[in-house]
Length: 401
Image (cartoon, rainbow, N blue to C red):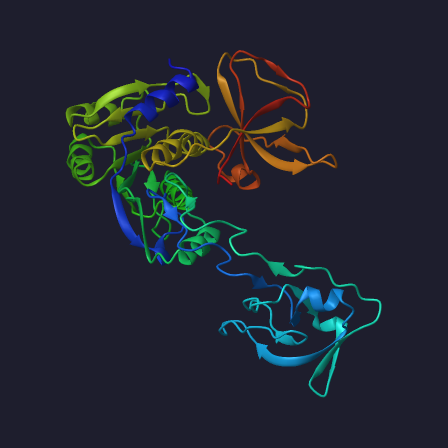
């Protein structure tokens, strides 16, 4: 069996880059940027006033003047006025600094009467205070965003400030999630005592959606070779990524690997030295599709989806690699099998600002209900048995931050 590291490397090697497309900036949140976003203008594009009050000349104030005739008022968006010697201009937050002005007295520190502003006693003005200098944030033409950035709502402000209405992003892949098994019944349908509700497919779709992949559809195929072959052929023809749940173990009804082989899908690996999820199957289709056949147990399926499928999608989307995240185990942990253990955990923090991982016990890999209390899972390496409290381990959140 491959190690988890070898398995992930094999998956990423087959995750070929998705095509690009141009989308409206309003629809770009969550997509992976594939262009440089350059500053249209320096920011701020002028000396910006940061406080309501009056704009005046430091030379006048430094010379002892404390009372200033009000020349005019200038609000945000008004054309720039030119300050006359010995006068002041009433100014509003966000306005351009008037010509010849280099000092702002806040409105709270002045009194106004009969067209004259007077600075209160004992208040000391400072030259250039409350002025946001032209170009101090960034210069015209600066590279504000580069390819590989997953666009956040905060990035939309940058894109809009650069005058861009559209951006080039990685194309959203077509993903098919397929649940296999005669025993599965969808929510809302009548169910018999010997059947179970279909939960893996909806959960996998939701997990993918939480990572910003939207072109996802779900299908349920019973354990029938001809039906599997017919329906999987359609999905392989239409999708970039095919994700199956169930049917990949060693049972007589586990037809998926053979059916995929019949359809020209080449196996890259089957089984990984990990718990949960050892039966994980991965292959590549005849037209470059990537195919994941996840174990049917819910915990195994979700861990494998987060660990391998999400990583493959991010790589193919051209997303910049995120730095590894660590947490300290909150209590002593012992894991004896020579396997990598992906252990579901709840995260807490201590007074020292340290992130602690508290194991959440699952009642076998079929206990999906316990996962609701978890934030992710930690990775316990296969070459270590005991992990004392405080040991730093890799942390994988269900939803990356």
